[in-house]
Length: 196
Image 1 (cartoon, rainbow, N blue to C red):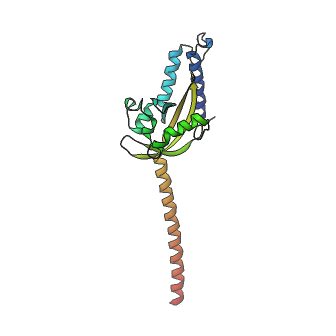
Image 2 (image 1 turned 120 degrees about the vertical axis):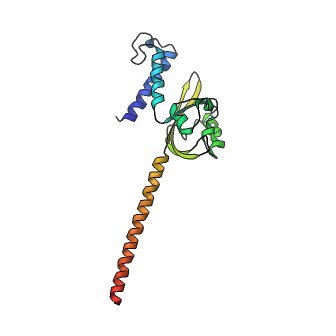
Protein backbone atom coordinates (compact mmCIF):
# COMPACT_ATOMS: atom_id res chain seq x y z
CA UNK A 1 0.00 0.00 0.00
CA UNK A 2 1.54 3.32 -0.97
CA UNK A 3 1.94 6.14 1.55
CA UNK A 4 -0.96 8.26 0.24
CA UNK A 5 -3.42 5.35 0.48
CA UNK A 6 -2.13 4.46 3.93
CA UNK A 7 -2.53 8.04 5.20
CA UNK A 8 -6.02 8.31 3.69
CA UNK A 9 -7.04 5.04 5.35
CA UNK A 10 -5.48 6.08 8.66
CA UNK A 11 -7.18 9.49 8.62
CA UNK A 12 -10.53 7.76 8.01
CA UNK A 13 -9.87 5.47 10.98
CA UNK A 14 -8.98 8.46 13.16
CA UNK A 15 -12.11 10.34 12.09
CA UNK A 16 -14.28 7.30 12.94
CA UNK A 17 -12.66 6.92 16.35
CA UNK A 18 -12.99 10.62 17.13
CA UNK A 19 -16.62 10.56 16.00
CA UNK A 20 -17.28 7.55 18.24
CA UNK A 21 -15.74 9.33 21.21
CA UNK A 22 -17.74 12.47 20.59
CA UNK A 23 -20.94 10.45 20.45
CA UNK A 24 -20.12 8.77 23.77
CA UNK A 25 -19.14 5.33 22.46
CA UNK A 26 -18.06 3.29 25.48
CA UNK A 27 -15.08 1.81 23.60
CA UNK A 28 -13.31 5.17 23.82
CA UNK A 29 -13.33 5.47 27.57
CA UNK A 30 -12.05 1.99 28.44
CA UNK A 31 -8.55 2.39 26.97
CA UNK A 32 -9.16 0.02 24.04
CA UNK A 33 -8.93 2.74 21.41
CA UNK A 34 -5.48 2.59 19.84
CA UNK A 35 -5.49 6.26 18.93
CA UNK A 36 -7.50 7.76 21.74
CA UNK A 37 -6.30 5.69 24.67
CA UNK A 38 -5.14 8.83 26.42
CA UNK A 39 -8.45 10.62 25.89
CA UNK A 40 -10.36 12.23 23.03
CA UNK A 41 -8.32 15.40 23.26
CA UNK A 42 -5.10 13.53 22.44
CA UNK A 43 -6.68 11.85 19.40
CA UNK A 44 -8.07 15.13 18.14
CA UNK A 45 -4.66 16.72 18.59
CA UNK A 46 -3.02 13.90 16.62
CA UNK A 47 -5.53 14.29 13.81
CA UNK A 48 -5.05 18.07 13.81
CA UNK A 49 -1.28 17.54 13.62
CA UNK A 50 -1.67 15.26 10.59
CA UNK A 51 -3.99 17.70 8.82
CA UNK A 52 -1.63 20.61 9.51
CA UNK A 53 1.46 18.88 8.10
CA UNK A 54 -0.15 17.79 4.82
CA UNK A 55 1.22 19.76 1.83
CA UNK A 56 -2.20 19.92 0.15
CA UNK A 57 -4.90 22.38 1.16
CA UNK A 58 -7.71 20.83 3.21
CA UNK A 59 -10.89 22.89 3.36
CA UNK A 60 -14.06 21.87 5.20
CA UNK A 61 -17.38 23.53 4.34
CA UNK A 62 -20.98 23.13 5.41
CA UNK A 63 -23.97 22.51 3.15
CA UNK A 64 -24.31 26.26 2.51
CA UNK A 65 -20.77 26.49 1.17
CA UNK A 66 -19.39 28.33 4.20
CA UNK A 67 -15.80 27.53 5.15
CA UNK A 68 -15.60 25.95 8.60
CA UNK A 69 -11.89 25.15 8.72
CA UNK A 70 -8.71 25.22 6.65
CA UNK A 71 -5.25 23.85 7.21
CA UNK A 72 -1.97 25.75 6.96
CA UNK A 73 -1.43 24.61 3.36
CA UNK A 74 -4.72 26.26 2.35
CA UNK A 75 -3.55 29.58 3.74
CA UNK A 76 -0.23 29.24 1.91
CA UNK A 77 -1.72 28.15 -1.43
CA UNK A 78 -4.56 30.70 -1.54
CA UNK A 79 -2.66 33.44 0.37
CA UNK A 80 -5.46 34.19 2.86
CA UNK A 81 -5.23 33.93 6.62
CA UNK A 82 -7.50 31.48 8.45
CA UNK A 83 -9.43 34.41 9.86
CA UNK A 84 -10.11 35.73 6.36
CA UNK A 85 -11.39 32.35 5.14
CA UNK A 86 -13.42 30.86 8.00
CA UNK A 87 -17.04 31.96 7.67
CA UNK A 88 -16.67 32.98 4.01
CA UNK A 89 -18.27 31.16 1.10
CA UNK A 90 -15.77 28.74 -0.45
CA UNK A 91 -16.45 30.38 -3.82
CA UNK A 92 -14.02 33.12 -2.71
CA UNK A 93 -11.31 30.65 -3.80
CA UNK A 94 -12.75 30.23 -7.32
CA UNK A 95 -12.61 32.29 -10.51
CA UNK A 96 -15.69 32.89 -12.65
CA UNK A 97 -17.75 31.08 -13.86
CA UNK A 98 -17.23 28.54 -11.06
CA UNK A 99 -17.61 31.21 -8.39
CA UNK A 100 -21.13 32.18 -9.46
CA UNK A 101 -22.23 28.57 -9.96
CA UNK A 102 -20.79 26.87 -6.87
CA UNK A 103 -23.78 27.30 -4.55
CA UNK A 104 -26.01 25.96 -7.33
CA UNK A 105 -23.80 22.85 -7.52
CA UNK A 106 -24.27 22.27 -3.77
CA UNK A 107 -28.04 22.88 -3.97
CA UNK A 108 -28.36 20.45 -6.89
CA UNK A 109 -26.45 17.81 -4.96
CA UNK A 110 -28.59 18.28 -1.84
CA UNK A 111 -31.79 18.02 -3.90
CA UNK A 112 -30.84 15.12 -6.18
CA UNK A 113 -28.04 13.29 -4.35
CA UNK A 114 -26.24 13.09 -7.69
CA UNK A 115 -22.49 13.12 -7.06
CA UNK A 116 -20.72 14.88 -9.92
CA UNK A 117 -17.45 15.79 -8.21
CA UNK A 118 -17.72 14.02 -4.85
CA UNK A 119 -15.27 11.15 -4.70
CA UNK A 120 -13.80 12.04 -8.07
CA UNK A 121 -10.61 14.04 -8.44
CA UNK A 122 -10.41 16.56 -11.25
CA UNK A 123 -8.41 19.47 -12.56
CA UNK A 124 -9.91 22.93 -12.36
CA UNK A 125 -8.85 26.46 -11.43
CA UNK A 126 -8.35 28.22 -8.11
CA UNK A 127 -8.05 31.91 -7.31
CA UNK A 128 -5.63 33.45 -4.85
CA UNK A 129 -6.31 36.49 -2.69
CA UNK A 130 -4.40 38.68 -5.16
CA UNK A 131 -6.72 37.54 -7.98
CA UNK A 132 -4.16 35.24 -9.62
CA UNK A 133 -5.89 32.22 -11.21
CA UNK A 134 -3.92 28.98 -11.11
CA UNK A 135 -4.46 25.27 -11.94
CA UNK A 136 -5.45 22.88 -9.17
CA UNK A 137 -6.32 19.23 -8.60
CA UNK A 138 -9.31 18.89 -6.29
CA UNK A 139 -10.95 15.95 -4.59
CA UNK A 140 -14.14 16.37 -2.55
CA UNK A 141 -15.58 14.04 0.08
CA UNK A 142 -18.92 14.28 1.85
CA UNK A 143 -19.65 13.27 5.42
CA UNK A 144 -22.61 13.54 7.75
CA UNK A 145 -22.48 14.36 11.42
CA UNK A 146 -25.42 14.88 13.73
CA UNK A 147 -27.79 15.02 10.77
CA UNK A 148 -25.84 17.71 8.94
CA UNK A 149 -23.90 17.37 5.69
CA UNK A 150 -20.34 18.62 5.36
CA UNK A 151 -17.82 18.56 2.54
CA UNK A 152 -14.04 18.31 2.70
CA UNK A 153 -11.98 19.41 -0.27
CA UNK A 154 -8.36 18.49 -0.78
CA UNK A 155 -6.64 20.89 -3.16
CA UNK A 156 -3.21 20.65 -4.75
CA UNK A 157 -1.57 23.53 -6.63
CA UNK A 158 -0.41 21.99 -9.92
CA UNK A 159 1.19 25.12 -11.38
CA UNK A 160 4.67 23.57 -11.55
CA UNK A 161 3.36 20.37 -13.11
CA UNK A 162 1.51 22.35 -15.78
CA UNK A 163 4.63 24.43 -16.50
CA UNK A 164 6.70 21.26 -16.90
CA UNK A 165 4.06 19.76 -19.21
CA UNK A 166 4.17 22.91 -21.34
CA UNK A 167 7.98 22.84 -21.45
CA UNK A 168 7.83 19.21 -22.57
CA UNK A 169 5.33 20.08 -25.32
CA UNK A 170 7.59 22.92 -26.49
CA UNK A 171 10.65 20.64 -26.46
CA UNK A 172 8.77 18.03 -28.50
CA UNK A 173 7.73 20.73 -31.01
CA UNK A 174 11.32 21.95 -31.31
CA UNK A 175 12.51 18.39 -31.81
CA UNK A 176 9.95 17.93 -34.61
CA UNK A 177 10.98 21.23 -36.23
CA UNK A 178 14.63 20.17 -35.99
CA UNK A 179 13.92 16.85 -37.70
CA UNK A 180 11.89 18.60 -40.38
CA UNK A 181 14.63 21.19 -40.96
CA UNK A 182 17.24 18.42 -41.12
CA UNK A 183 15.18 16.55 -43.68
CA UNK A 184 14.68 19.66 -45.80
CA UNK A 185 18.41 20.48 -45.65
CA UNK A 186 19.26 16.93 -46.68
CA UNK A 187 16.84 17.06 -49.63
CA UNK A 188 18.13 20.50 -50.63
CA UNK A 189 21.74 19.27 -50.57
CA UNK A 190 20.75 16.28 -52.71
CA UNK A 191 19.04 18.57 -55.27
CA UNK A 192 21.99 20.97 -55.21
CA UNK A 193 24.40 18.09 -55.75
CA UNK A 194 22.48 17.00 -58.85
CA UNK A 195 22.63 20.52 -60.29
CA UNK A 196 26.35 20.99 -59.71
